[in-house]
Every structure is written in C-alpha cells, then in structure tokens.
Length: 534
Image 1: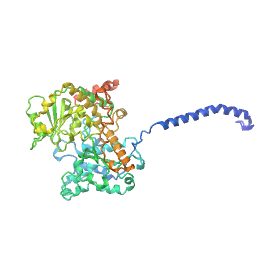
Image 2: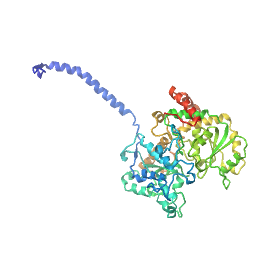
Image 3: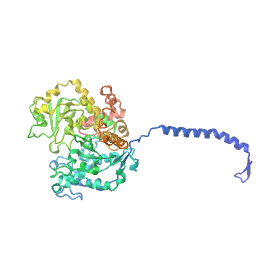
Image 4: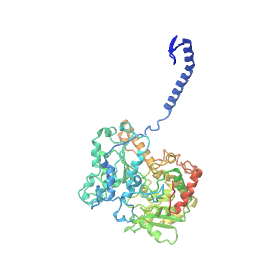
C-alpha cells in the first residue's frame, strides 16, 4: 500500500486494489480518446489539399517598380511637381471630360465611385488594372512566403505605368530609351538568381495593362516607334507569362485578359440584381455603336457603320459618342443605351480588341464582331472559342466595307427567339468577364469566378504544363497552346440550354426577403442615377 498526505496533515492509506479498479475505469475512456484522435487524423489525411498545385508566391520588389510609380498620377516627374515632362494616365486633350489621374487611384485602382452611395459602379481607368490585380491577389488564399514551395510566382510590377516616361516623353524616344523599359527589373531579378534558376522563369507571371503589340518592338529596331517598348523582347523575361489586354497572333508569351469595365460588384445580391435588370430591360433599339464617331479618311468598318446609321431614319441604329474621353467620367452614358439595344457593334479601332465588348456583355447586349482577333482569338480562358455562335454574331468586315452586306438587315433577320436565347447566354458569361471589388462578400467569391480568378486558373495550368515538359525533358512542348481555351475542360458548364450555368435562370428568383428588397431598391435607384446603400 501507499501513504498519501491529507489536507489535515494526517495520512491516508491507498490499497493497490483501489488503484487497479480506478485504472480499469479510466482505460475505456482513454481508449475511446485514442480512437477519436486516430479517426480525426485519418479523415484529415483523406481530405484533398485545397492548395495543391495552386500555391502562389508574391515576389518582394523595390518600391520603384510599383508603389513609387503611382506618383506619376500628379502629372509631374514623380516628385509631385508638375512640369513639362508630365506623364498623365489619359489623353491630355480629354482632360476636361476624363477622371483626374490621381482620382483614378481611389479604391486600389478601381477609381472613384460613380455616386457616393454606389457599391458596384466605378470610374475605372484600364491602365490601373495592375494596381487592382496586385490588391486582389493579396487577399487570395494559398499564398506562400517561400518561393521554393510555390507553384507560381507573381511579380507586382506596374509595367504600364513604368512605360509612361518612355512612350510619352519625346526626348526619351529620340534617344532610343524606350528599349530600356523593364531593363532595371530584369537586372534586379538577375541579382536573385536562386528564384529564377529553379524553373528558368517559366513559373513567373505579371500583368501588363496594355496590348502585347505595344510592348514587343524588337530591341534592335531604329528608329523607335512612338508609344511602344520592348518589354516582352527582353531575354531575361522571355520565359515569363504576361497577362495583357490583347495578345499577338502567336501568343507564346502572353494571354489576353478582359478589359476592365466599370462594374465591380461587392456581393452576390448586387450581381444578381444587375443581371436581372439587364435580362428584363426592354430593347427597342436593334443595334448600337459606342465609340469615336469621327469619319475615317479611308474606307473601313467603322466608317461603314457610321454611314449606315446616318442613312437610317428609324430607331434601328443608335450611336454613343465617346470621343475625347466623354464616356470615362460617366459609364451611364453608354451603359443605359446598351441596356436598350439588342446588338452592340464591336468594330476594331487602333487595335482589334475593345473595352466596349465587355461593357456589352455586362449589359446583356449581344456583341457583333467583324474579325476573329476582336475576341475569339484572344480570351480563351474566359470565353469559349468554339461557342461564339451561341452568344455573338460574326459579320466579315470585308463583306460590309467592300460588299453589299448591310449590318442592320443582317441583324434584323435573326429570329426574336434566337436573340433572347443569345442574350441569356451573354448574361451567363457576364460574371466571367467582370472584376469583382476587392474585399467582396464570401457569397459572391464562392458562387462565381471572375476575370482574375479565371486568369489565375489559366496561369497555373500553363505553368504546370511547362513545368511538366521541363521535368520530362521535352522542352519542345513548352510553348504548346492546348491550355489556352476552356472548351474541353468546361464542356459541361457551358450547357446553356440545360441550365448548367453557375447562375441559372432559377437563381435570379431565389433571393432572401432582404435580398429581394435590395433588388427592387436597386432598380428604383438606378433609374434615378442613384445607388444602393449598404
């Protein structure tokens, strides 16, 4: 037996049989505890890793490659003093109608709200997508501090802002300095060879808020072309993936992102309210064109559109003049007419792609393309290339400019039921080309992937393919393009007629009482050019 002290200082006697009985009583509980721990550990081991193949490392760059570049918004040389070497974000000739450059930086690059109480609409400048993308990726899950554990490496380099001095300062153009755009970044990365050498840069990606054509002038070209740089031609960056607004014909380095619109919803209720409004909106106008309305000096598709609209006396064609930045300050200037039009014309301008394409999709206005480079050959991660006939109309521009084809007659011949069906499909695509607001509600993040989500999915697919090719000793497969469309991987999701969309028609009506009230308020306020509060 054992002796034990008592509170009174006396001693007690504990018999071995008593200890044995207590141990027998505790053993089943102990065994149950062990079994529960084993079960939990086994269940955890069986669960798939949600970050497998999706880990991203954000490289730390000196401020001169990102934050310091925002000082150019002041219209000065970076020190806040305006002078003759200003680098404005927009066209100086449109300063009276455009959003002030520094104001465009509000809301992490989304720009100022269109109304103080707005929760979804902003005056967004496309060049600031790099800033907003950086903000959004910081709130993404599966971020890692160690690049050795990352599946992809993001470079927060504001390339389009860094290009402004090279493309807008005449003295630098005359000195062939535009060829040095990005050289400082390449030198900095080369000084940290450990990260680059692991996969030879194939796991690195960045955003360039512009056309790839504008940043791919050959390094040796003289004289330099105004408005262009050689960023994509730098040997040190050759293996990186660039996310641009427009890709080249053979896009082995880059992939196109949708142009940002002014619509950035913060919750699923806001998104559904807008899509339901677009679906219900009456559309008395047959076709609409929003853009510059000056007549071209040579025959082209824009000139043909303007001429055809000018010759019509009915309401079949509507024109929205966006010359000199008129539409930059007021998205309602073109969004309201788009809500009332069945078809939105998307002729190429200085480049094949247009922001108006994505404004039209957000508005439920069926896009009309005149060449494949306008969208079909660009946005394979966001729009299914093999199914453009389901949600758009294609009219060859040559048939309009040099032939006898009239656009209005072609569109008027489309049966009304087919137009409604195409509109439904366009609105199902809308969440894929929008950029939701940073800090958005969990219900929206979980229900819909937006343009950034899909871009990151595409980047990770591309990097996995290239990494696999390197590991298998097949470098010739690095630049294959089979990962650049969603037709195969998302075949089931694009069953438009069977309701396989993430936002089926029935979803528009499955709203809580509060959401339904907010939806009704949204309609009322939008008509009054106001915004929903909350």
